[in-house]
Amino acid sequence: MLELANIRKVFNQGQHNEYWALKGIDLEIPPARVSVLKGPSGSGKTTLLTILGCLARPTEGRVRLNGEDISGLPERFLTEIRRRTFGFIFQQFNLIRGLSAVENIILPGYPGGTPRAQLLARAEALLADLQLAHRRDAKVEWLSGGEQQRVAICRALINDPEILVADEPTANLDSTLSAEFLAILRRLAEAGRTVILTSHDPLVVESEVVDRVYSLRDGRLIEVVDTRKAWP
Ligand SMILES: Nc1ncnc2c1ncn2[C@@H]1O[C@H](COP(=O)(O)OP(=O)(O)OP(=O)(O)O)[C@@H](O)[C@H]1O
Image (cartoon, rainbow, N blue to C red; front, side, top):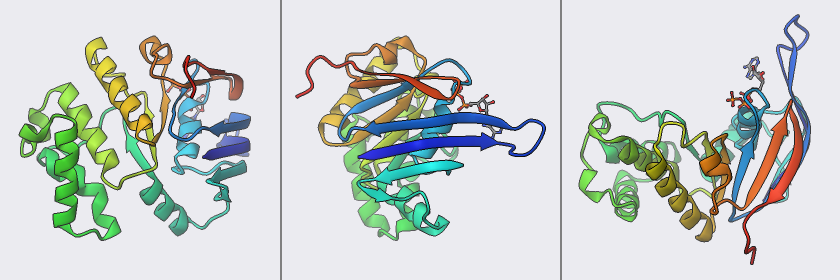
């Protein structure tokens, strides 16, 4: 469970262009669910996602992960928590050209010191799970958009994260690929992973795979709606 209490974030503090991107956010992200942050451009979705994913620190407020207050931890502890707990999927996928699918997938596993053979076995299981086993050795620039996204999902899962974070993940996908991506997220949530996305894509926000939608406007949370019909 991720909890935020009174989160505020300022950019360029004390300068003429000081800007409060988040103005006091309280929220709880439910475990093993798909949550979406939505809102107009500039409302603070990405800023909030970077704080939820421990990629950035709030200016004020508390972040609690499974009951532990992690807001004040030194950077090296935060880096370790990020590596162990979170998987990230970026809008442009951020795959490394010139490397194969499997090499891209195992990259985030190296800092943890897991032996390469073990990482390869894990990557192969993930590739098989996402019907990509046959593309294992293909250089990522040879892959289609949908295949690249599935490689990005495998890479995000290589450290077996509890929480999967994705910023505008369907921005570069057509409707069919977006629907496939959402179905994968549903499966991951049902297997116990917490999924957090930002999106203004109605296909995502209104999708039946989404459990909860947080609406942001001008750096504030204006509405939280549990959208899925059957919350067990
Ligand atoms: N590093 C930064 N320095 C200064 N201002 C920033 C910085 N990052 C974000 N902002 C500002 O904070 C506000 C919120 O940005 P954010 O990227 O979180 O919005 P968003 O809702 O994700 O928008 P979009 O949908 O366009 O991606 C914007 O006005 C943006 O210009």
